[in-house]
Length: 106
Ligand SMILES: [Zn+2]
Image (cartoon, rainbow, N blue to C red; front, side, top):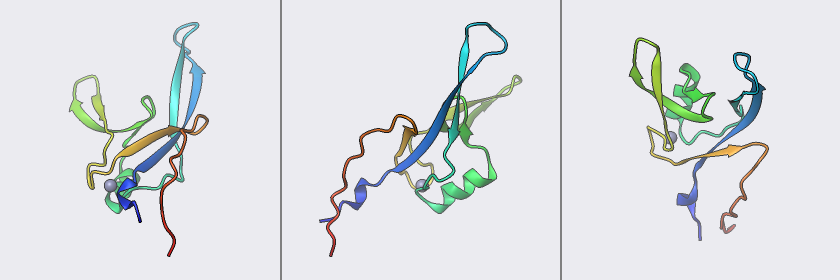
């Protein structure tokens, strides 16, 4: 019995909290994507190499939604735009319990 459909891409990030230099007693978080992230497909991997699709503010992959005079707004995505694979976001320091995949060895 193999549950290959169980696969979802796992984007592991590192969360860092910094003090906001512009306002006292405020902090902001910066999310860095783990370099060893396994991509669901080659297209998405290539896209990430060519363009910055990782949002450091949100800790998610994001695509440009709207371009305005002030800059642009982004839309975080939970699914790969190419193959439709679900993307699981996971904090490196706070890992989710991993469900054991049922893979029977032959
Ligand atoms: Zn994909």
